[in-house]
Amino acid sequence: MHEELFLILGLLFIVMLLVMLAQKLRIAYPIFLVLAGLGIGFIPGIPVLKLDPEVIFLLFLPPLLYEAAWYTSWKDFKRWKGTIALLAFGLVFFTSLVVAYAATSIIPGFTLALGFLLGGIISPPDAVAATTVLKGLKVPNRTITILEGESLVNDASSLIVFRFALAAILTGAFSMQVAVGQFFMVAGMGVVVGLAVAHVMYAIHRFLPTSAAIDATLTVMTPYILFLAAEHFHYSGVMAVVSGGLFMSFRAHEIFKTGSTRVNMVSVWHTLIFVMNTLVFILIGLDLPEIVHGLGSVSMLQAIEYGVLISVIAIIIRLLWVYATAHVPRWFSKKLRSEQSVGWKNPLIIGWAGMRGVVSLATALSIPLYMNDGSAFPHRDLIIFITFVVIFITLVFQGLTLPFVIKLTRIQEIDPILPPHEQQSLIRLRLDTVALEHLNTHYASASGNSLLRAYIEKLKHDMEGHQQFLSSSEACTNRASETAEFQQIMSDIHDHQRKELFNMRKEKTFTDEAIRKAEHLIDLNDLRISDSVA
Image (cartoon, rainbow, N blue to C red; front, side, top):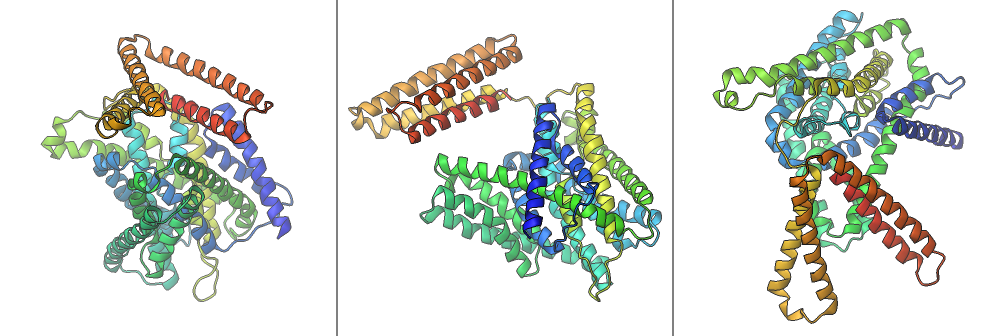
């Protein structure tokens, strides 16, 4: 046990170094993760680490789904719900169907149920991969929203397909009519259980005397509670996690009232999801030699060929589906024809951003080792190997070429919106105005308070600053250049402020706690500036 733990920690450290290299080279880190997983598999003498497939499913998938639900914009999700539904449900089922029949014709001895199992595994694109690749690139806000919304729901729909296909293989019985009815019942009741449990967690956060540490711990526990509660009643734990996550995210402003709680929770979740992403690829690397050995009569070259063919099929299906759903409905709807066409650029980017990632890999690894009768699960190692090949091709090939596709298309913002820095200034102006009006209405009698007078003066000064900033933005003819210069100058100022804080540590006047709080404020200001000009 000690050796295995030391091995994982050592590999995790190496992967962290690769991620740092990816950031230095400005390449999406999921691409380096899949390369690291492949590299680990070819290290001579690397020990094989065996984990219970059910443990992998339970350990990794609930928090990954919950995090995706938490950061989904409910407003944007509702706005583009039609497009998202066509991708998240229609494309997942269509991909699973085509892959199922393609796999049975390509791979000898592959049954239709195994084909649906493979299709359910590789059908959902990964949000982390897509958003990481698109970070810093000029992509329409609608594109990001659709990709994030799709990845939230398609994880749920693909995992349901996976579970039904798995049940059909294990029991040897499958009825499409029964499966469709069970799908809606299992998914619907999963949503009900998820919302019910989420209300309980909401009440705990809202009405009990929690702290920042307790709130963060509860949020980590919540996806597991949601998943286990639904699975206990034989409903969809995946839908419970997604629906519960959306509810908790929508109510976050009511249950996390202090800045320290929110900052602490965000840090915890960013770290947790990052570590889980890296661990899954380390696990596939440790298991890869055993998987290759378990291919049996199928040679490694044949398995790679199957993976390449399935990858090409999945890529083509996505491109065709995205273009069809973007333009065909306009032929039948006068209302849609009256709206501006999305053209060919946006569907191309959405179609090419269908990179598979950690959810597909974790799902593949969760396939049981044995059937109900104790015999080995048919083609388990081949399915996992094909999944890895699909992830490798879509992440590395599509991930590295996506930025060039975006630059070549020269796509512009489809829906006119204010630049991020102007939005931030308008938000701050509105909030400061509300604060000042509330003070004048309810706390006029406290005007003699010197601290309150200082706060009011600061509000007025900040409001003048925001108004001047907005006026200068409107008159600015070279906004992008000035924004970049402003960010660089502010970053330099913050660096000098941190150095001054370091010098203050040597003085007896200030405590370490005061220095840390001041440094935290600088960090928040730095984050606000970088986000507002991104």
